[in-house]
Structure formats: structure tokens, C-alpha cells
Image (cartoon, chains in turn purple, cyan):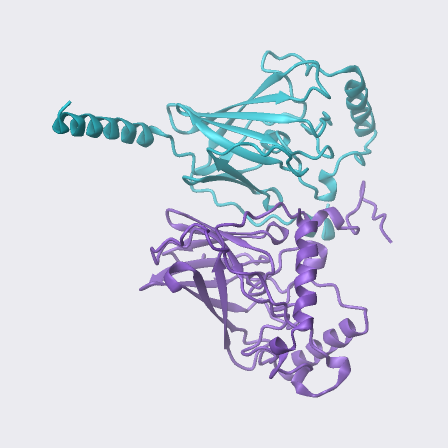
Length: 269
Length: 226
């Protein structure tokens, strides 16, 4: 099923390429330089909203339960589409290196290609659906992509010595109808985004989730701080659509992980 | 019957139904199998009723495993262990029980199961590692029916095979102490077994335990130092 959905997403990607309006007025190359070796991957158009006749969204602004699907998909997660994160010069050079490698057909392996979790904030930028489950004191986000899972603990602090993990330690609280989620404890084996913006273990991500349009949409403002790789914190805005018609599918990245050893020996070339 | 009597009966019925709903146990929390088994046995202690050709595969798996060769098994390559094998390992998992869906989320490689309440099984399910699950409450027991397994997984660590015709029924009953969960696994796979058979397992609550981020592929990439 994951394969079927991949085919659908590729078809959507094809549509996105065929829709110049989507990529109008946004840089097609890094720094809008016109340098073809720094060509940015165009966005995906993204999933549709729920079809007519779908179950009505839950009107409770504090109830996020259900399946949501990101509207559009950006390969680079800067403050604006086509604009890179405010990386320090040495990390901007790393991003340029990765974009050039990608355009040369020899991309650098990132976490997701090795079936590791996608890291933050990148895991929230998925062309696959996510499912939110709310139990007392907890929000759980089950991502279809690579069975990523985030546990957001409500009304508590991060542990003192937070272990470094791919998706970090997340705590949340309500500010009115906005759920504010604070994440630290991220290892540096992932990138901020699909193009390859770097973050360090000092990365700090703040997410503000709020239901809009009577619950048909979930707005997300993400703020990224990283004193090691970023000149200054920055924020960007994304929207998910309520999709009661969608059931997340089994997605087993490991099925195609040819680097996995058999009896301790890597057989793939 | 007067309107007032009807209203009274309706109220009494609603009350009875309400109390029945309230009696549904809440399985939400973290659980672990403290008595894991490598070789699944029937509840009476007997060997699984394998057909001769399936027994030959099982014996071959055990013989190659004894030589240290587990190439028949996807788990060392981070593929999902399948069912009921996932439930036979000493691995914590959490149940998130909601009205329409019950989630089983395993610590091992963060695998999720979604179990849809009060729905029918699909007629032509896709072949999956963890199958397609529906469930209902039978009194205090959560009964999960799962079909749509691919035939690449094993029923236990020892290498007990199954076909894609496997229909697994799991029955979970919360013990009166609320801290133990008793399970019966009924295995219906006419391609592999001479008859339907049932195995047992028990889980204990791990109050206060929080599932850790376990990334199998990262474990393989950076093996622990000896």
C-alpha cells in the first residue's frame, strides 16, 4: 500500500511540476542566484482536502484527534518558500554542497534514506498523513512515513538530562486554543529539511498548533532555534487538512533497506 | 403504554447501557510480556498442529538457526516481527484505547498497530506485516480479528511459519487486579496447520514506564561495543 501511495505522490509531484503558478514568484535556485547547480527541488502540490460527504470535523478546539494531511510539501524549510533557513555562513556552504550533490545525481545520504526517523522539524513536513491520538496527559502523533512516532507530554518539563534522540523530547501546554509544543534533546544525525539544512544537538523547536475553519484545518507555526547552525531563530507556517476519509497505511522503510546486514554481513552493493 | 412509562423504560435502558459502557475496561497504558517464549506452544502445552510440509519448514528454520544462520528471518534486518510473535517478546508496548480505534504501539522499532472497533474484516485485504485488524468487546474481553498478513513473517522467534491465509484472533481480558492482561491467541491457517489452535500469554502493567525511541536501523548502523 505504501508503494501505491508513493506512486500517487509521484503523480502529484508530476502535477506540481506541470503547474507553474505554484512555483511562480519564488526562487528556483538557492539565493535566487540563477546558478543551475543550486536548483531547488520544486514543491509538491500536496494532498487534497476531505471529499464532500466526509465526517464533519470535531468542533472542540482542544481535540486534535484524527487523521491530518499536510497541504503542499516544501523541500526546504526556511522562513518563506524558496528561502533557506538563516544558516551561519559555514552551514550555508554545507547546504550548497548538499544541493549541488543532489543536482549532480549523487545526493548525500540523510537519515530518512537509512530508515532513521526524519528529525525535527522535518518529520512534520511529510507528504504522507499523520494521525493524532489524545489520551490523558498526552498527545501522540503517529506518522505514516516510516512509522515515526512523537509523544507530546502535556503540562510537564523536559527531564534534566534529556537523552539525544532523532525526534527529541516534546512537552506541550495550551495557551487558549493554541497547543504550544517545545522540543529539545535532538541528535544531530538529521537535517532541518529535505534539502539538507544542518542543525546541532542544541536545536530547539517550538510548534504552535491551532484548529481553524471549524476544525477543517490545523495551522502550525514552527519556530526553529539553533545557536550553533543558525544566525538567529526563524519561523514558518504550515497547514494540515482534516482527513477523516484517510486511514494511515503500513509503511515499512526497512523493506528496501539494502544496507541492512544479514547475519552481520552487509550483502547489498 | 403511557408516555411517562415509555420515558421511564427508556431512561432505565439508557442507564443500563451507560453502566455497561462504563464497565468496559481501560487497557490504556504500558504492558510487557514478562514470560516471553521463543517457541510458541498450544495452550495445553502441545506442539502446534503443523501440516507435514509446514513442519519441514519449521524444522529447517530451527536447524539453520542452531548453526547461527537467521537469514530466513526478517527481524535481524529490522523487518516487523509479525504476529503473535510481537506479543511473545519481552518488549514493552503501549495500548492507546479510544472509542473508534485501539492502538498497540510497540517499543521495538516503534511499530504501530491500528485496530478498528466494530467494523468488518476486509474481503480482499492487502498483504501486510501486521495485517488489518478489527475488534469488538465481548463482555470485558477485547477480541481482535486480524487478516491480511503477508507470509514473510514468523509466528514465533523459533521460526514457526504461516501462510497469507492466517486469521489471528486475539482475546484480551483484564485481570481483576487491573495489572495483568491475559491473552488467548487463536491461530486459524488451514494452509499451515491441520486444525485451528490456541496459545496463551500474559502481560503485566509497567506503570510509569515511558516507551523509548528504538530505531532498529540505527542499532544496526552503530552496533553496541562488545
